[in-house]
Structures are given as structure tokens and as C-alpha cells.
Image 1 (cartoon, rainbow, N blue to C red):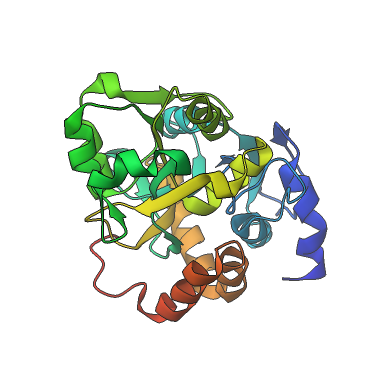
Image 2 (cartoon, one colour):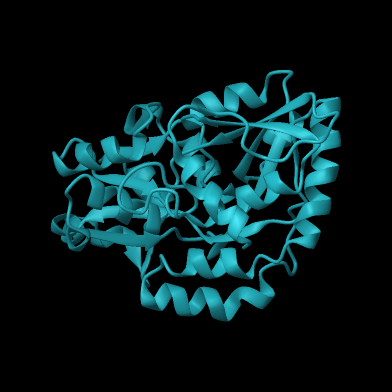
Length: 294
């Protein structure tokens, strides 16, 4: 990353809206709104690592190489971000999972960033009671949901990947605790701590970070991948499917082909626990093989 890019990093993490500060062409009259969620370790809004997420490093590079746009950055929760991406405006989110439903109203980048998949977090004190659903180190979410014995915390409008999404759609809605707020995951972890929830879905690095912010020791939690899910998921840049959005995506794809992602991948890997990090770096060359996603 250039020194110029590094100077922008703190600016990207100021709450609310950020205007200007990036190079503009003489005809830069279109405003591209970047929708960022608090999604450690990709984007980090608060705490000692504020602005040091993996995508916090990539976004200034994209902005520098898209001088034909004015760039606006908004901090939004998941539900608000999805609402804005359905509207006829030039909005893009740099950290989205591709789903068939989203593809009906969004366009996605061809190149993706790979993360370790979502899983489920339990309190260690619950492990004995959850033993029937833990098989070979994986959690049988479908059996757990069918048992109707517990509530699961999820973030509204988030995709957790095709396997988990399908199981959640078939579940009794009364056992799903949907959170729409800005600090959704932190609030869900507190609800779990107070025994109002038995389980919380999410990415393990993200859960560990928010647990730390909430004063919850990571050792009090156990994380399990979901039975049937792939070990990794590909996040894409997604823009509203409008003429402006499609034109912007052509340029974004061009820039992504020119930008090496090794530094961003190394930054993400540094947030993983040692075993997960070793697997992630080992599997990196095969991430884009045999994938049905765009």
C-alpha cells in the first residue's frame, strides 16, 4: 500500500458520512456510496483496532483508482444496507455473500475475498447439554433447530451461506432471535451471556472481537463449524443493479484485476487463531477452484 493510502485509513473509520479527500477527475459528478458494516476483522468501527480491518486496507486503494467518482462512505447496519442496495442509487457494499435472491437486484464483482465460514457459538457451560448436536467437531444445526429446544441469535438480513440460510428458512421463526441494531452481534452475545439465547451464529474472528468489546472472555465461548457447510466463503463487492451500478462494477472489476490481494489476505489471516490461520494460508491457492459463484 502506498504512503498516500495509509494516510487515508483513519479517515475511513469516522462514524457517519465521509466526503472528499480522494483524487477526483474534472468530470467526477457521480457519487458512489460505499456501505460499510462493523464486521471485524474485515471492517472495524470501534476499539483499539479501529480502521485496521482487512477491507479497511482495500477500500482506499479502490477509491484512489476510481477517480471518476466522488466517494461517500456510510456506516450502516445490515438491514439498512440491504434496503439501500434495493434503491435506485449508486451504492456498493465491499463485503457481501452472493445469493440467488440478492442477484435479482444487485451486481457482484467477479473477484472475491475469501473468509472462514460462519459457524455457531455456544457457552462452554452449555457444551454438555449440546453434546447430542456436536458430531466430529461440527454442529448439526438442522437437528438443533428441529428439536425446538433453544433460541438462536442471528443478524437480520445477513446471509450465513447457502446451507445455513436454507436451514434458517425452514426453522420455526419463534426460535430465531433476529437483531436489527447497529451493534447486533454484541447485543446477541450479551443476550447469550444472560441465558436469553443458547447459541449465536457468526464468523469466529468477528465473534471473538465483539466478545472482547463486551467484556466476555473468549475462553467462555466455544465455536463450531456447521455440518454440511464449506469451510470457506467468498465475499464480493456488490452494487445496486442499475445502469450506474453496472457501469461502476465494470470499473471495480478492472481495478480488482490490477490490485494484488496478498496483503489484504495476510491481514485477515492475522486475526485467525493459529490452527485456523494455518489452514487458511495452506488452502489459499484452491479458493477459487470449482466454485459455482460469480
